[in-house]
Amino acid sequence: MTNSVFQGRSFLAEKDFTRAELEYLIGLSAHLKDL
Image 1 (cartoon, rainbow, N blue to C red):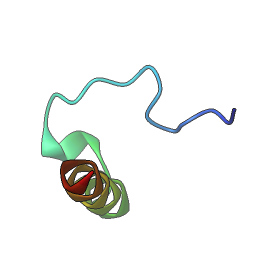
Image 2: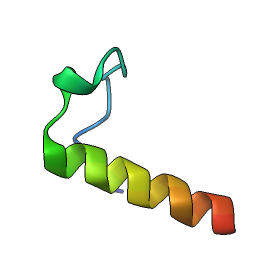
Image 3: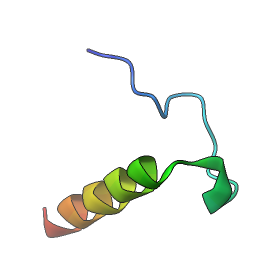
């Protein structure tokens, strides 16, 4: 299993993440919702 760049991080504010990271999280949440 590979380590995630999000491991050990908390979501405190949008400014704590890059645009690419936020877009990834939004896409992941949409995918999980569709499961």
